[in-house]
Length: 262
Image (cartoon, rainbow, N blue to C red; front, side, top):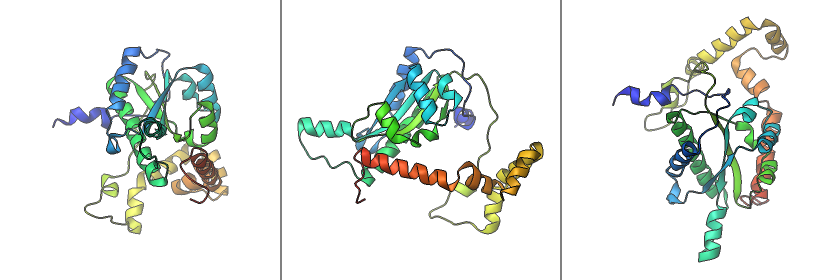
């Protein structure tokens, strides 16, 4: 295989600045053809996609997802939802037994939903579109459920901003391949291996501090002197993770995927 055939994957960047050019309907249709071609467990396709172009809906998502400007500027937002409601309705109409609302079913459908979302990302690259994932879609999932009138057994899992890129940002580094790929069984890391794996991130943090010494002095007074500490104490602090975790559990119960006893 010619490696250039995979360059659209190797060179992909998250795009956070978009032009005002709308995406033509035929391009959106091709994008959705790619999405529904994605593999899924049992070929049940337990996901749905909501296409969002309305300024009002974008504005609401902007407020709920941390006020990220690209949510407002992207031509198209794609909300990928775990969806076993369609299966429930099938059983309701044609007969059978509906028992597709537990943790294992949710995780399987969640995997299908993420696969579909990333199929959209890669197809978008080939169609000249840029994209960025919005992780904060999970911050307030019950509010998202109400905003998009999601019925029981539908859960908002992935939000994508898509449009024509107005920038070519720098390519962020990745961890070394050997730190992620394991042969035959999982191999845990020695202390030195951990240092080697995260060397680029730690050096990047130090270089950043050289360029912004005032802010890093404030971080230092908080005991934040490494990239590891910045990531876990400042960028994703414990109270934030616990709050999101609580909100996700509440939404899973609200949508029928978990019971209070689970």
